[in-house]
Image (cartoon, rainbow, N blue to C red):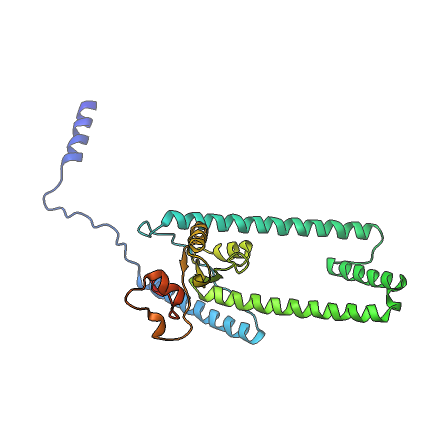
Length: 283
């Protein structure tokens, strides 16, 4: 009987009627009910977003959109490794600045807590600094500095001059920031007679070039006022840090400085009033 049952099972699994149609699978297409439900939800979401935007505009609230994911640098990009190194250096500098700001805030909080433990009334760091300035002014008045009008007036004048200098420096830094933000390649013009004193501080150069999309070219001007070997030595030294081009700016258009047939390039460069080296700058 067991063998008969096994034979029946085997024949039933193998046998397939000739006129039997294969059953179709379930369709993956969404139903119209779900489709219309999604459309209603999208419409409702857009309506809520518009209503919230009007409400934020009336209240003066600014909402920043979510930042898009950085797609990265394609492999076909030229100098990809150098660009990646610059990005890594920028990130390291930002992390270092963040750590320094954290340490500074921690030290200020410790100073504030010590001040409060000693019986001080300041609740914030700003109040503590203002109170310290007031105490210093009171001490100076008690020590007799307020009784000297001439020195006090001169001090006020010097303070005013320092304040004006700080304002002009801030204005210069604002304009410099605008120029740096709007430019891709920065040209730094140096005086060939003293390139070091006419060059900006290295820390400022590093701050400008910390951004991956900024490049700097050094322009050594007034090469006609120094000997040729000195110009060559300065070019060799400056080109170790940045690309450097030597030029001589023109004073006026004149046919006298074009040189005669027998003059060489060095004579024309020192005697002509026409600009020299501009073709290298344009390239």
